[in-house]
Length: 217
Image (cartoon, rainbow, N blue to C red; front, side, top):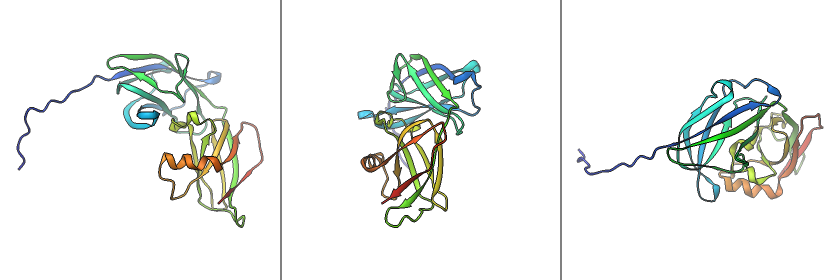
């Protein structure tokens, strides 16, 4: 049996709070089942670890996150559906989709504004072998914003997998992306960065566009 451990002091830090409003463009209703979470940022704005702070939107489009770990945090919104996307998260003239927000112990960050939109963009195409143009079935891929300042937020990425004919359709925030073709060698965020220089640029548009063909090495 182990001996009792004596004279151990555990220091607890009071968490902070983040509150604000969430709206949908065009005065449309909020989607059901969305929730918020925060992630404490580490050195060089890399991911450090996530916080379990989550909150359903309160009445009239407001939200409150409690018990947030003090420090530089990223605020993210999980929608759980493809017919809405997060258009912006802002506070005190800061873009919180590419920047962190500092939370202090026992204090509340107020006035965060989250804007959702239903003006979804889409892209369809197929992934083929660069050698013989054969379609690549069940190939995993990821869309990363061309604005690398948004790479620190996981909610800025989109992912998908081709069907048996190598075709795919992906929906999300309109804009310019790099399509990153994933393999067993991609195991970390740094591995994703290495794919960017050779990645093909694609667009998610709200208007109809032709299919794209992506050649995989």
